[in-house]
Length: 532
Ligand code: FAD
Ligand code: NAD
Image (cartoon, rainbow, N blue to C red; front, side, top):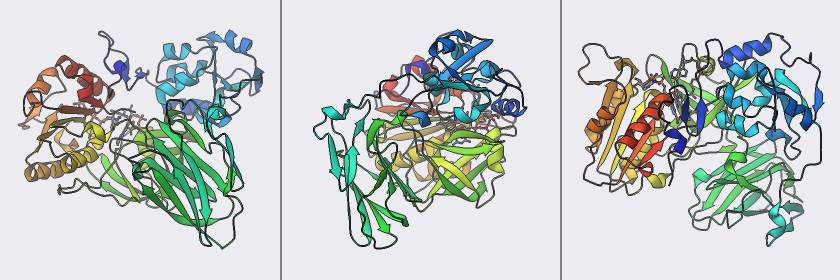
C-alpha cells in the first residue's frame, strides 16, 4: 500500500513549488489566472503568429521551435485516438499562465507534451483552452498501431450474436484475467452480461449510462477499466437495472425495450468498446445532472445537491472526487469536488445508505473564483456535467484500524465525511477517531454543530478545532499546522496501535503536514493524503 507519493515530501529549501499528488504547481504572477488566459484568447490577438492559418508540422519543424520565445508543443488528444497524429500548439503566449510553471513547459519544447500536460492537471480540456494557439496538425507518418495483444489471448475474435468482438487489451498484461461480455433478449428486455471474473465486485465499481441509444458500461478493476460501449440497435427506456453477483463478478445490465422488436445485434461498437485499459488512459465521461437544491452551510460555503439522470448508475466511493464541467466565457472549465453525505449521520449501526440518485457537494464560493462564481449563479433546475469518480483511497486502508486521525483544513473536510461514517459503522476494532479541523475563523467551521453532536453521541469520536485567524475571545487552540500541534493533538490509544492519518486541505497545508508526520516518525503506510 503506497498512499503518499514520494514527491509529496518536499526537498528542503523548495519554497516556491507545491508538489502534491505527484503534480507540481508554481504560484502564478498576478494577472495570469485561468480567467486572464481566457480573456487573452478572446481578445482577437494572433497568438500563433500565423494569422489564423493552420499548417502541417513535420517532426523536424516541431523540433526547431524549442525556445521560450518560440515554443511549440505537440499534444495527442484522446479524441484523436486511434489516429494519434497530434495537434501542435504555440505555447509561448501561454507560458506564464501554465500552473506547472515555465520550466516544466519547456521540458516538452519542440516535442510531445501530452504527458506533461496530463501530469499538471489531466482534466483540463486542452483543445478548448489552447484553441487560439493551434498551429496545425503533425504531418501524417505511418505510426505503428497501438499494440493489440488480443492475438495472444485464448479467444481471439469471436462473433457474439452478430457483433464482432475484437478485444483490445492495451497495456493490460498485468491483469491475468480479462473480462468479456455477452447479451441476450426476451420480448421486453435486453440483458447485457459482463463477466468480470473479479471477486468482490460491487455497485461502486460499475458505472452505467444509457442515453439516446448509447449504452456505456464501465467496470473498474483495480487500476484498469473495462468498457462496453455501443450504439444500441433500437431505442430503450431511460431507466434500467443493474444486478451484480459479487462472488463471481458477474454484472447484468437489464434494459427495457421501447417496443417488442427482435434485435439481430446489440448495436454498433463505439470507440472504446470491449477494451481493458488503465483507468488513467480512459477519458473522463460526463453526464448532465440537475441542480435540485442549494443550502447555506456557512457565510461562503453551500451544500449543492445534484440529481443524476435516471439513465445513470453511479456511486462515488469513499475518498473519491468527481469533476464538474461548465462552459465559462466560451471555454470548458473543469474542477474537482468531493461528494459527501447530506448530513453527518449519528446512527452507528450501518453506514448511511444514499439513494443513488443524488450527489451532494459542499463547495466554498471564492469571491474571485472562476468556477465557483459560475456555480453560485446556477439556478435550481439548471444542468451541470458531472464526471465519473476518481481517486486512490481504498476502504481496506481503514479495516483493522485502531486509531484514525483526520487532519482537515477548510473544505478539505469533504472527503472526511463519508470516511468518518464508514469507520464508525464498519470498523469494529476502532478505538479512537479524531478530527483535527483547521480553519481561519470560527464562522468558517463547517458542520460544527453536527460534529459536536457526533462527539457527544459516540465516545470514540473527538473533534478539535484549530483557528489560524481567531478572534481574541477564542479559548481553544490557535495557529497553523505544526509539528508541535500534531504531536500534542494526536495520541495513539495504545503504543504501536494500528493507525491511519488522513490529510486534506490547501496544497501547502497538506505538503507541510506530510513533512511533519514524517518527522514525527509515521510511515508512508500510516498516512493518506487526499489530492487530485
Ligand atoms: P480559482 O479561479 O481557481 O481561484 C480564484 C481565487 O480564489 C484565487 O486566486 C484565490 O484567491 C481563491 N482561491 C481559489 N482556490 C483557493 C484555495 N484552494 N485556497 C485559498 N484560496 C483559493 N473545493 C470545495 O469547495 N469543495 C470540495 O469538495 C472540493 N474538492 C476538491 C477535490 C480535489 C481533489 C481538489 C484538488 C480540489 C477540490 N476542491 C474543492 C477545490 C476546487 O477544485 C477548486 O479549486 C475551488 O472550488 C476553487 O475554484 P475556482 O475556479 O472558483 O477558483
Ligand atoms: P482556507 O484558506 O479557509 O484555510 C483553512 C486552513 O488551512 C487555514 O486556517 C490554515 O490552517 C490552513 N492553511 C491555509 N493555507 C495554508 C498555508 N499556506 N500553509 C499552512 N496552512 C494553511 O481553506 P479553503 O479555502 O477552504 O481551501 C481548502 C482547500 O482544500 C482547497 O485548496 C481545496 O482545493 C482543497 N481540497 C482538496 C480536496 C482533495 O484533494 N481531495 C478536497 C477538498 C478540498
